[in-house]
Image 1: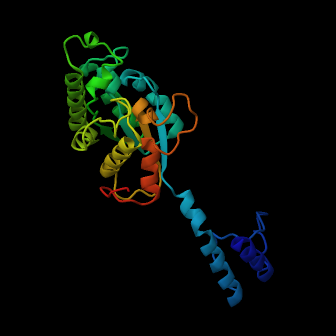
Image 2 (image 1 turned 180 degrees about the vertical axis):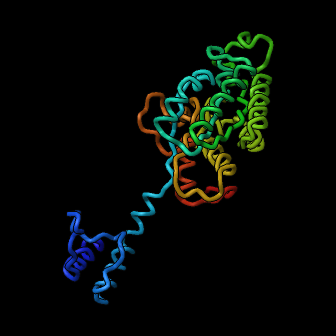
Image 3 (image 1 turned 120 degrees about the vertical axis):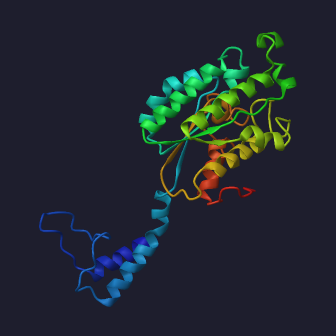
Length: 275
């Protein structure tokens, strides 16, 4: 309402002609004020500019994309990375992979395979001009995990050992490619692990668990982010299983990308308590 009112006053107070090239005859806020504009008109234009500030800020918000697909391992995520980079054109890629590689017997990969695919995803992201951040994988609640998977499928290597191997691979890629890594494995462990408060089924997280993940990621991102796109690339833990049903087109407010988006939009600094 203020913008419309002030704009009418500008049109009434200023008789501006279009450019000689036949361009738009409306007043351009990006140009210089005419020398013959009276004091009243200059005040009105200043008010119009002030009225536009919230819109300008809204257009400058950081965009956070949830690019998680449930059930995928690092090989499947690698296979779609190039297409997703072209589609979203991110400045930052946050990669959270490895849980399926380690504990989902339908998606098993060796630590060497995981490392190879993570390194390739990082290479493609760098080639597209994006910074890459990795996330370590948390230990599942083995009791609840084994309610869905037979112990025999792990072939004598426990889920915990498999997760440790994946995290070693992630840390090796981070060291070799000079990437920052959000140590969610350690952060969740300090908070009590994948218990019933932080995890819905021993693997996927609750709203509180995803909040902890979002704050862990925020801590490693640049302190001041004004514009750009962050691509959260991953599996069901990025998608938000636990707080979001598979196939739900609405992300909701409790996934980690959604909660990261809130932290950034509210200007909560890295390391601050988001509550």
